[in-house]
Length: 469
Image (tube, helix red, strand yellow):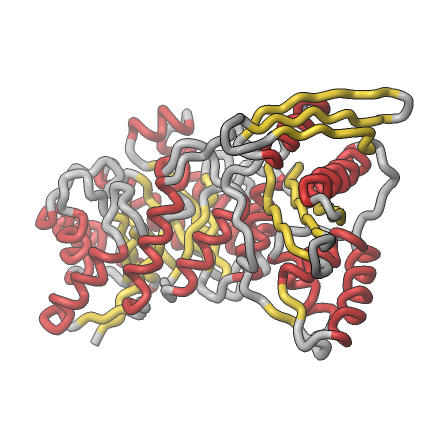
């Protein structure tokens, strides 16, 4: 029985799936969900070369056990930078994307056929010099000129590609036509027998699954798809195909179908949520999202691995400080979870002088009025005031601070917990802000939980200001 491979492109298709950018934490949640399903590959979108994309790639690479595939644009992509972002994965792969139809070559790359062939040879060879597993994806292959398509595939294989993907990007073929197209390419390029052949059929005509089935019958090793509906066959549709037609086609897949509906439902809910950029508290997940626990027996490499999974990029000195503090806490407890580790990082890593400090704050809130915050901060000899109106007192306070500093930072996480018991219990707040692709955390403690939250935000803000200066 043939086991077909299913590669999920949800993370690569994010710009088309949701209006507004996803937060760093949301991308990690999607990757975790796909990894639980045991898909045969998780594909990432091309990076823009920024620190945020590189950090997201590195964090996902350290977190998932599934093969991780990073897309690179053949025309102008940075192969080396992309490789650096995923090289830490257990099974990394570089995927070189080249538009091969005349229209797309001219419109997106401003290249003629000969120049595109040279770019394919150069970029694929460069990728193979860095990574053992290199894929070549023929974008809009079904509208490419037949001779040129075969030349491009042959050039990519000769340069080192060991997987080829053919795309019906425009969605112009029915299932029988797709099967014939695939057979024609296989006859034209005999070198395909020595590499894995994948297909990426469109579902524009509602025939995506039928085209996938035709390709599998025609010898394709796998199919590119997405967990949620995005114009391509979905994981659920292909799992159903294998369930119903598996015995007849003599095929199976390694997908963990028992969790499929639940995970897909979670991802759909996440992607349908509106990204409310007006509120600092939007899209903040509270809790032990990484689901990781450590104990006294874990060495510094294991602790720092979890630190990176949480999104931090610390210096060696700060890593050592965090590990020492972790050991002290671990001796007193049976285990240390991600909440405790967050608090350790906030209180030990990147301790800096206070650029901003709290002079005073007045909060008005209730069930019949809109929450407002009037905050006065000191910066040297200056006194800076901000007024915020928000969805609750803490949201209003954070908006007032943003008004003072004139900048909005992504709130990566926000946690509140009690430190002591009784009516005069101390509350601890943890705030994690993201700036320039890095996470900065601050901790605040007070009997007033709103005051603790403001102090935590200012603590994280001071670390950002110090680093930027």
